[in-house]
Structure formats: C-alpha cells, structure tokens
Length: 163
Image (tube, rainbow, N blue to C red; front, side):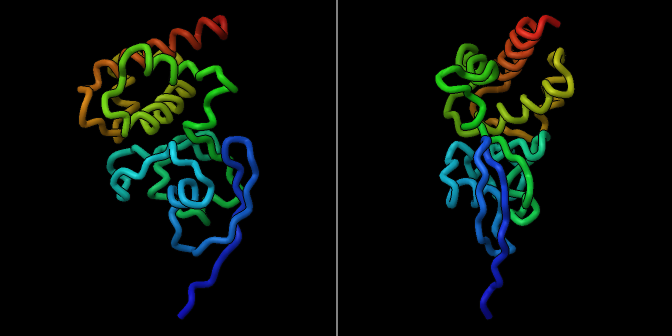
C-alpha cells in the first residue's frame, strides 16, 4: 500500500520551502536530504546525542525526534543559518577560538543548544552551561573547551548588547 504524501511548508535559515513528504519522514532527513542542509549531522537517530539539534520556532529541538509534518509552518534555524555573510555568529567564533571541537561531529548541535541556552540565560555560570548542554554528547573533548566557548560567546554577546 502506497504511503500518502503530505505537503509541509517550512522556513529554514530565512528561506521558505514547500515540500511533499511522507508522514514518517524525520525533520533531519528533510533538512539534509531534501534541502541540502548538511551542516545538521545525523548522529544517533534516537534523540540521545544531540548532534542534529536545530532551532525550531526559537527553541532547540533534536531534529531526529521531530517528524517533518510536525514542523509544518515552522521557522527553523540550522547552524548554516547562523553566520551573517562572512561574519560568524559569536558562538561559531568562540567554538573556533576556544578549540571547542576535535572531530567536529557534535559541534553543530552543541552550538545550537548553546544558542538556546544563551537566549534563556545570557550570563550562565559553568554549571548552568553544563546543565544547558545536557543531552548533547561529545566523545572527544571532555567539555572544558566547550564550556569556555559558551562563556566567551555569552560575554561577547553581552558586550555587543551593552548589558
């Protein structure tokens, strides 16, 4: 029996897309396979690692645990949409400058989870950063540089905003 297809409309990194999808298609596969947003990696496909984290309507979401049809009408921001032209987002710059990556596989999800954290708490301490990144796993770094990068991006963002 053929699967019935559904039409979803999403805005990803500021661009509106209308796609016909099977109801069981995961958002991560829509982003990567259909829209070419390969900066969102597929890690575990079970919601455990957080590598596929994106911003969905302003909050972080593991895109492997969201059906594409559930995102219909939503605004999605991927790590690829953070930069403004050639200007990196403060989190991207901080992750680079603090060497907060080794293999880099978890980095997009870590950055997106950090973005959500800093929206809620613009001045987190190290414990709050670690708690905010809970559910995003890194097998390489031991998290020290990741925490430092988030702290640095938070400070830079506060300086820019004058807070």
